[in-house]
Image (cartoon, rainbow, N blue to C red; front, side):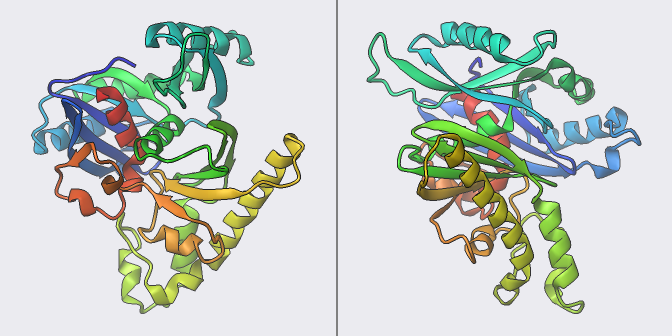
Length: 349
């Protein structure tokens, strides 16, 4: 991806319910995140599931204007039902040459060679001490090109210039890498939460070993809490808020959700170990992120049964990132912005 400096870039991450917006720019080696916002897009959807560009475009334009963002260059990410994801070992080379090699490999491995594709990639191990003749693992993703068409019309309506398309899985791994997460100390479990599902990823030996989409997302947990919380509980009115926190006395109400998620995790690990013909493997930690990261004390909820170190992506773990928004460095749900921040930081990095 081409890097943009100066006035920076805008990141837009679309989900089924919300649009996450972030703006960032770079000064020297420091990344400045100057704006973050979330927009409810449910009232701007047409019956067929398309966006009403006549109403949503101006809303996006006004949100950008309200944050006094000057740039019109935008990178987008959006949900794809079945993204093609592989780790490809490529020789150590320049970014331009790597892009060419990755494209050739994707074209060779992609099941339907007749489909026009958009390809994204991210080196998982770009250490500077690799000499000539060495190789590095590169996370490579591809989606059908026609999946981006609705977003092009929408950005034109918002008077934005589309300069890049990212895949969420790559962005979350980028955010983790920026925070110094070690992917070489056992199995790392990454849970990328969405609205109605969660991307469950297993990393080991600096490689993405498994990606599964499971049915436990923010909406399922919200429905369980809405069903089980006492009718007169004051916390019920805040269930729709992005920064909602489950009161300590109600943590056990999420037990049904945790049990389902734990079952999916166990099945995924068993499948992976069976596939590589190993009898056991140790999960060293869990990374939590995604636009469906909800509520803010999600680590405590999952920690009821998943007794492992949990890393939720926060600004204080990124010393080169300065958050200048009203949230500041103490914003408790930074992980919910991981997909869009990953786009911005990759674009200006």
